[in-house]
Image (cartoon, rainbow, N blue to C red; front, side, top):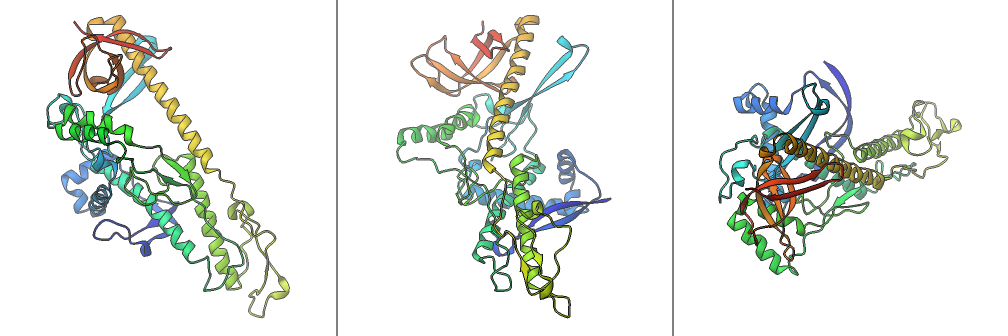
Length: 427
């Protein structure tokens, strides 16, 4: 057992899954870590009932996560708008003396843990309804629990900030000696413009009702409606998440942007506590430094100390907050890293196809689902290669294709380094 320093947020949920704004608490804390659990561990404990008895907290968190998911869906989140997501692949490259060039390539297909409905290979056979899972595990309750709690924290933090702003930073009703404000990077996504795109909206609805490709054709077509996410210091609604405000800061993957928000919140809390101490005439801890506060450390005026050792005056050399967090820098780095990740993953998928084509040409044939048309003049279509969890463009050799059709495609040529792949009809 060991204590770990943390930045904790606590909320109470209302019956409809929304957050009781008055209940939000943000505070430094210490967490006693006695043991760790993997997602698989938690899924197993919930399945066997342990998560509702000895470890009842897991069951309570899952119930709260389900309530939160339903609340966001009712507010128009992606999980409701696009209930059947397209499974994506994860590529792992490991050292192996038996593999070509000493590197083994493993491709696994992952369900979208954030999807409203789990999507599997059984749902991509062109039938109208998803069938039993075959190569993708069912939606993980543990993943949903972490996802919903993370999103809930991302909604609660800006709501807490707005509540603090409404208090005007007063300390016991008095104006604080040290200026204090909290700047956060609000993430927003505008609602799609459906009114001016009536024809496309009808196609979207037809694809959803028809369940072509197990709903994946609808998921692919829906992408064109989504607008890019923006980051601003002003509050903004987030259509994809179904929230009226959101700040990304609690991801299990510690992004630079997350750490920047952590720093801003902790500095705000320290300044808030410092104002309370000065209001009560207490001495300033010698351990405090400018970097910890984001401003100069106030100095007690010795002549103002009374017989009880309390100060009535402090010298604030610079009460202007000098936050040095450039939130857009973090966003830019995330975008760059995602692009690099996409290129890297594409390279190794193409390398896998190149090895297959050279060593076992007859195995370089894959079943592909037609997602939709990208260029009707060239008969170019977006296809989803099920076995690889991979989307690509295909120039039809057999005329017009319809969404939801299944084709047998072969790898005609591939160049991993150039990022080139040509698919052709098999046999």
